[in-house]
Length: 414
Image 1 (cartoon, helix red, strand yellow):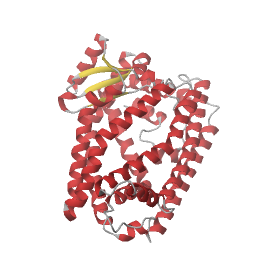
Image 2 (tube, one colour):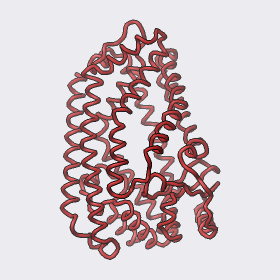
Image 3 (cartoon, one colour):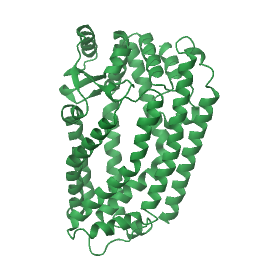
Image 4 (cartoon, one colour):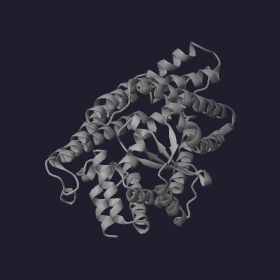
């Protein structure tokens, strides 16, 4: 029964993805030759057409990648790929926990290797074609190695601990495993700004004293404590611009991409930060963490039940081992299959995210001039080649941020 459901949901999700992508391509290309009226005085036709072509190229690559990923999932499950990998790993060691850790590592490395050509094409062909790529092959390889090392140092102990709990903590192992995962997630969020991020980028204190004072004044008005203001050398990888908050409590810091600092005026930067502060003021971050941790608890509970069902393995192309535990296989199968069944929930989470964005925009409009945020949004849309004419259904399904035209109309109505 699970096999049939899995195939139905997988085919339906692939078909839906392709249909939505086709709508997006058709809609963007149909509106390629005319800038929407509200942007006509701000964005030129050439920039609008570049954004349309960039969006179309990204969507088409995503269509191919989505079909390919679905084929990989089928190959690893119903066609016996995972079974074959488990048999091979078992020939390397008789230690049960080590075998299972190696199985998780082997599947992770294999899927990463399979997806690597897409990453290379996206970075060095697609992004380069539209003038965004600034990454060298050497930096790409260095980032890849660093990511593998950091992932191994952080991920391997977590995987080993979860597998040990599955074998040793009884029927409620999933509750202990969830607690461990939650603690690990918080730890990573705490150490990311000071230990992990500097491995990949250089962070320097914001040198513009006047801008720094304006930012601190905004933070004081919003009762928001800051530890530092930093500029990140994002331009060594991409021409895209961004800014973000990171850290918790008194360790919170604001990080600007150097490309953003170079493009926006101080007033526009303040308006963008006011929007981000709106997320904190309305506790959007805390709410999302609560939803994430609650969802994870539910998923761990479901996994705890499924791991004990022989049909869960058999219906997904794996024969459970009789001479050892199957915990690693249960983990891998679960995390491959869950996205297939939960894809239908995507528009719900997108709607919640867009609602939060509108709320943050309203807060920004109360703390800074709405016109400055509008000006910043237009520049960011133009610089990042974001389409001004997304398909409404595609946008409603996927977009975590409202389309630029709708956001601007809401801001100007404040």
